[in-house]
Image 1 (tube, rainbow, N blue to C red):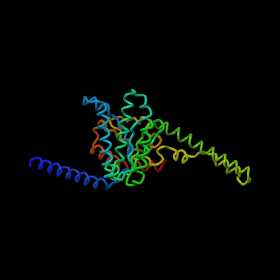
Image 2: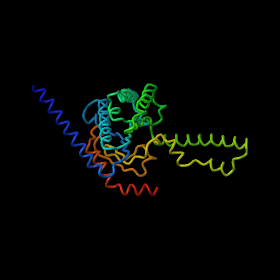
Image 3: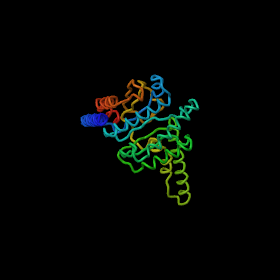
Image 4: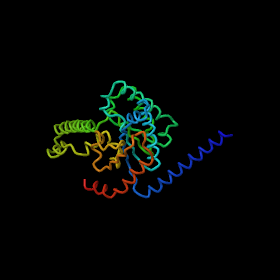
Length: 287
C-alpha cells in the first residue's frame, strides 16, 4: 500500500512539473522564440572529475542533458537544435578515449532510431553533420541509418556535428563549389564549341563563385543560421564551431558544466534573446 501511495505521489509531482514547465513556455512564447539553438557541450570530463566518477559516466550524463535540452526545445517551439558532439580535433585525444566515445556514439545513435525514443516520439528529424568519412565504418553506417529512419519526421530537426570543424566545413564548401563551377564551365565550353550560341559575357558570368554557392555546399546548409549559441562552463570561445553561421548570433555562456545544464539556463538564454531581439534583427538586415 505504501509503495502504491509513493508511486502515485511521484506521478502527481511529475505531472505538476510538466504542467508548470509548459505554462512557463506559453508565457515565453508571447515574445520571439529562437528558430535555431546550438550547443557546445563543454565540461563532461570536468564534471566527472568534480564528482570523482569515471569519465565515461560524465559523457553519459552529458548525453542525458542533450535529451533534456531536445525535449525542452521541442516543447518551446524551437525548430532546429544543433550540438557539437565531436570535433575533428578530438581525434588527437588518447586512443582509448576516442574509442570509448565512438562506442558510446554508436550505442546512442542506435538508441535514437528505436520506436520509443524521444526522437520518434516528438517527430524529430536527425542529421549528422561533418566530415563523416573520418568516422569508423560502424558509426558512419549507424549515422546513415538514423538519418534514413527519421527522414519523414517533420516536427523539428536535430543536427549532430561529428568529425566537424568550421575550417573543414569552409574548405569543403569552397572545394565543392570550385568543382561544381569547373564542371559547369566544361559543359558550357562544350556547348559553345558545338553550336556557338553561348556569349563570352555569359561564360565569364558563370565562372564566378558566389556566396550562395559556398553556403549551399556547407555542411550546415540544410538549416538556418543559429539564433542562440549556448556554451557551458562559462567559456566564450567558439572553438572552431559554426564560425561562418554565427555572425549575428547571441552567445550565452552559463558557468555550469554541460551535464548540469537545466531548464533555467535555457529559459535565461531565451529571455536574453528576446531582450536583444530588435538589435539582432537590425544587425541581420545590415548584412
